[in-house]
Each structure stands twice: as structure tokens, then as C-alpha cells.
Length: 632
Image: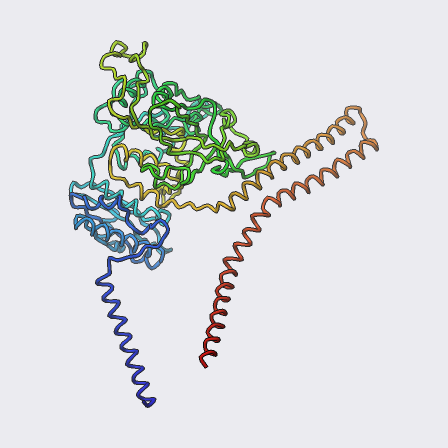
């Protein structure tokens, strides 16, 4: 074969390869357009089996209108990629719905009718440059009864929650009839006013995000703490720090639960998130007397005078020690990871982390016939902390330094089921309203197994413990940092039997702490804090000795310090310098182990992998040369 024939054959081979490449792409686009492989941890790009029925069971047409500006795509490639993900999700949703979910796309060009409709839906315009051009990336959806749900702008900060946001929107439009939740609480969940000087004026506070979460899926009715009746339309009762619950209300709740009613209880012995007291005043302690009576009948006791501490789950906070700012672990504020939650229960099984603050300790009654299933527990690196040590401005450094793990897990949340007895065996106690009706129709024992969820913390519902808030062109942008709201919604969904969206709420929370580094840091810091306290005490003592000499000289009317006192002061100052040097060495030693581990990890990531790969290539080349030599 001549060189010309070989060249022609090569050109033909290239042409055939190009045709095959195009054919394979066309066939794959046609046949495998719906096929996808998700190799991400947690399968965040795969629809969960719990939410698929949300789209398969849509009974009325829902129209979703997506407004995305081409100018925004050109100005921000990240938003272009985000738009493609939204489009892919909506395409899957539409296919699952069998055509009941209709998706339309629009490019709202400036001064067009499409832009007017986008503005009419309340979509947010963002500036793209200095010449006044704006872009849109939002969504408006309506159902057959003209109910409307809007995402004003797909903010990049909530990209991890996009599947949850879209699914919640569709679920709300396809299920206008929602279960009803009765809420008894003393918490300022609907906002209020921060008292000003002398109780006058003040600053308004917004509603808590937990209420928006609840109202997305349920109808919520506020109930009084002295109620004597619970309506038949109430599906689940939520007691969120029911401060001052009357005996009549407690009896009413007792009878309602025994007759088949379901309840979620948040009872906090050291509330930090109640209504703010007047300036200069101290918050009034919560009155949970009758709530504790109910808990005791349900098989658990809220321990008096203590809160739960966990050095392994401690939250790092800014505080002060010795008159200077420091960062320290606060063992009374807990960021509990998945290993602290019951992964086999539908309420907590999909959650990644919960943040609790000065939570109480629940102790199960050893003789109760009820089934008390732990949902939330501390690690074994825990202890009970005296409640008076966390009131007001606690000494965070001292709590961390003096922490002594008990080796036992403390119970913070539980699911309670079984045949319970009434907390009021004799009926409504004398002195309660309508006392004459106490024995009429009294239920002494549950007619069916009770269903109650109890948590020993109410601060976990407050915004500051589970969300970060930012301002996006005048709109509040909320990004969850913990699954606190998901826990409550999961419990309500489970008790009401509504479809669970919990698998989506938890997917955006990906907390993967480097536990080896955290353990090294915590152990080193505990040693450092103890030594630091000792050295600071020595410094303070030396400064006191110098001050005492100087004051003594002034008291004797002497203007000059004698030689003996001068030598003493010199010695003290020399010791102060050596003590400060020792303190700096202790502070430097705090990071030695961490820095060494960090250096090792950098070496492995930067140099280790290339070295291993290069060595492997050398070995393969050597083996290949040996095989070639042997063949020759």
C-alpha cells in the first residue's frame, strides 16, 4: 500500500469517526435524555421517593411561569448554570405530574409586556450595570382557583434548597386544605416590640421564621393558656414554652391527649428567647408547673435546676476573659450532629444537625409502662450544668475549663407512645374553672395509645439559633444553618399523616466537621485555658504586690521608694515578663498539633498524590520495558 493510499484511508477513518460521534450524540440525546447518574454524597440531584407523590397526585392544573433574563445569563455565568438546574428540576416535575404541571419560560426584556407581567407578579429586578439595565430570575405559579405562589428571585445563597423551595411551592398550590395546628406559647413568635427606656417606645421585632415554616404547610390557630376546650378541628397541639398554663388548661390538654389528640411540647427550664424585659430589668422566670405535671403523667421528668452540657457539641462563641475578647467553646449551647439524633425515626432520620441552647434534661420514669423513644441525646462527653451558671452573662471560659464529662448521654427529646394514665386521677382539681364538670366524662386512662413528642428546649425555635438573615435589595433572605425548623415540621407531618418534605429540607444542610482536628483543638484548648487561668492569676498577684508597695510608700508620706522595695518591684516586674513569655508559649502551643496535622494534610493533597501517581507510572514503565526486553 502506497503512502497516498494510507493518507486517504486515514482521512476516511477520521470522517467515519466524526459521523459515528455525531450519531452517538444524537441517539443518546433521544434515547437517554431522561437518564442521569448522581454520584454526589447524599444524592442531592436525585428526587427523593417521599416527594415524588407530591407531583404524581396533583389533581388540578398548575401553571409555572419562569422569568429569566438573557442579559443576566451573559452577566453572571453562575446564574446561567443555576437556571439550567431549575429547568431540569421543573422538567422532571412536569413529567411526574402527567402534564398537570405546565411550565412556561419568558425572557422579560426591558419595557416589554413580559417585564410588566413579571413586575405584576412581584418578581425582583436586579441591576446588571451602570446604565440602568436590570435582570430577572424568578418564578410565579398559579392553580385553577387563582391561588398564587412566587419566588421573587432565585438567590444563589439558597441554591442548596432549590428542590425544597420548588416542591413546597407546588405542594401548597395543590393542597389548599391544610391540617390545623393549635399553638399555645408565651414566646414572641409573631413579633412584638422591644421595650424602650422606662417601658416607653421600643423597636419592633419581626415574626419568627418558624411561624412562616409552619404556615407553609399547616393552618395555625393561637390558643389561650387558660383554655377549657380544644376544638375538634385541631389535628395537633403544639405547646411551645406554655408559660403560666392554668390548671384548667392542663386538665383539658390531659383529657384531649388521652382521647386520641396528639401533641408536640417544647419545655425549657432556662429560656433565653422570651419576650425582652424592660431595659435594665431581668427576664421573669417561666412558670412550667402544670406543664411538668403533664410530662410526669407521660413518663418523663424535666430535671430541676440543671441544663445539659456537651463538650463535643459545644458551640464556639465570642466572649471575654480577663477583660479581653476570646473565642471559646460554650458547652451549654449545643450543635448536635446526626449521631445525636435517632436515624431510624421518621422525625429525625433525615436531619443533619440541630442547635439547642441551655436545654433541660429529661429523665424517663424507670417504672413507666409507656414507650419513651430517645430522638435527641447528647454524646457521652456530657454533664449536667447548674442552671444558675448560665443565667445572665455566664462565664463561658470557666464552664469550658471546668467541664468534666460524665460518660453518659443525656436525653433532650423523645417520642412517647403507649397507654397513659391521667395526670389528674380525681378529675379537674378544685379551684379550676368549671370544677363542677370535673368528674363528668372524665378519662382516667387513654382510650388509645398516646402520641406525644417532647423536647427540653424552646430556644431552638428562635431565629438566631437556626437561620442566617441577609438583605437582598430590600428583601429578607433567610438561609437555614441548622435543621431546627425541619424537626418541628417533621413532627407535625408525622403526627398529622401529611406527605413528608423532610428529605428535602435537610438536604441543604451539609455539615462535615473535621472531627480529628476538632478533637485536637478541644483537648489543646482545655489545657490552654487551665494554664492560662493560672498564669493570669499570677500576673494579677504580681501587679497587686507592686501596687501594694507603691500605696504603702504614699501612705507613709515618702516620695521616694527605698532600695529594698525597689529591688522587690524589679524582681516582680522581671517575673511578670517571664510569666507573659510563658503565657505566649502556652498560646503558641495551642495550635502546634493542629498546624502539624494541617501541614501533613497539605503535603498529602499537594505533593503526596502526584508522588504516588508518578511512582506508579515509573513502575509501569519499568515493567513494560522488562516485558519488551523479554519479548526481544
